[in-house]
Amino acid sequence: MATPHNEAKMGDYAETVLLPGDPLRAKYIADNFLEDVVQVNGVRGALGFTGTYKGHRISVQGSGMGIPSMSIYINELVKEYGVKTIMRVGSFGGMAPDLQLGDVVLASGGSTDSSVVANTFGPGIYYSTVPDFKLLDIAYHTAKELDIPVTVGNIFAADRFYNDEIDMQKLSDYGVLGTEMEVAGLYLLGAKLKIQTLDILTCSDHIFRGEALSSAERQTSFANMMHVALETAIKNETH
Ligand SMILES: O=P(O)(O)O[C@H]1O[C@H](CO)[C@@H](O)[C@H]1O
Ligand SMILES: O=c1cc[nH]c(=O)[nH]1
Image (cartoon, rainbow, N blue to C red; front, side):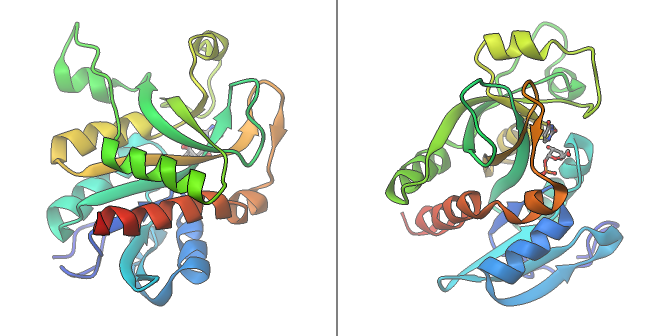
């Protein structure tokens, strides 16, 4: 059934959905990596498509920026459209000294300053948000097979893109690889809704060195991440 944010009908989405923040990245993925593509959503410009990859049905949906926006799409994809597996394919700001622009990261944990985790469990509980291990395992070994270097580790989901209150250096000192705005919400919803989730990311800038891909490069230079995500999707389906 259609929702306030999604005009798709039941059955329009595949069981596996790739979830970039940027709706134009969703279109780019559909245009360049999928076949037999149909647009299933355009409400608010949050573009969603379903097509096939190597004969396997797969969807891609723009989620917007930040946990609140993404949560709307995930809740509806799961509850209204029966989606079972969601892999976010996003950009992040590198913090680890050895990360380079374009590097792919698999988030094995999600830290956050978002109240969404604290508000779920109440005071005194510091819940660790983690991905589905099967997806993480497949993605890691798929990247190895494809000869795509990946780094696995903790990612920080910031509620604010612009902030000077968070001690990013301290997070980095404690092993956090980089920052984006969704990972902890993605993994929290994975646990709540009993679906598989994984955050696969490309380093779009380095927050300490001041290096950055242009917005056009961000949209198009994510081929390695996409190959890992798509091959993981079909192996996950067939294993
Ligand atoms: O490139 P996407 O997937 O949107 O991800 C990152 O980019 C946005 C901020 O520019 C946030 O959504 C952040 O998580
Ligand atoms: O620095 C960055 C880069 C991408 N996304 C973010 O949220 N932060």
